[in-house]
Length: 204
Image 1 (cartoon, rainbow, N blue to C red):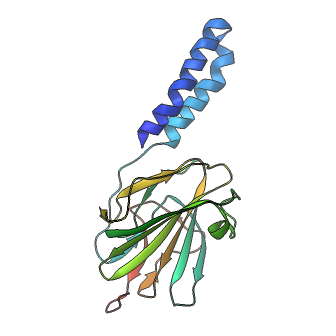
Image 2 (cartoon, rainbow, N blue to C red):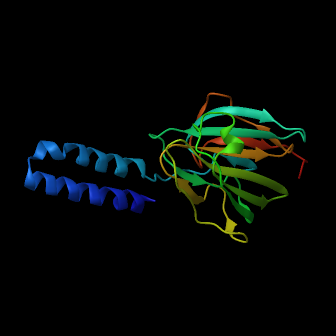
Image 3 (cartoon, rainbow, N blue to C red):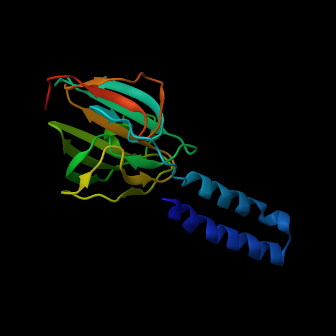
């Protein structure tokens, strides 16, 4: 994902160099700051993936909602600000059953109605008797959702699947076989934070 940082920063650095040459270096400072921010924003650190029957966070950020559904499952919503790592990872390993893009609005991603109203990419993964659905949701600033996976692809737990550019939200829908392991307001890290544990003897 670092390639995106280079993609955005190189033109900014070039513009700064031209301004420095034509005018003065201090007029170019904003361009250099923006270039440095782009490199920082698109960082992609390695993560240690926990073993066992657990679901990991698909994103870095803050848990802003844990909402039970009528089937006994839960939706966990994670808000990413512009300073969070924006690389997304799959909560469980298995087979990608569906990838569906849905057009929508660009509401502030921390709002509850962003879960259903905003532009989003919905990914379904089947693995080990469970089905987990998670959404890459665009926010007020985010205008580009990137997903590298397609139906039929096999993925490992915590594997990179894409990213959302510049502020966003990720929702995870877990069935009743999962016990939520995070709290509202908790900070989580993609691939390494456990958000749910699979209950013994329960499957989809």
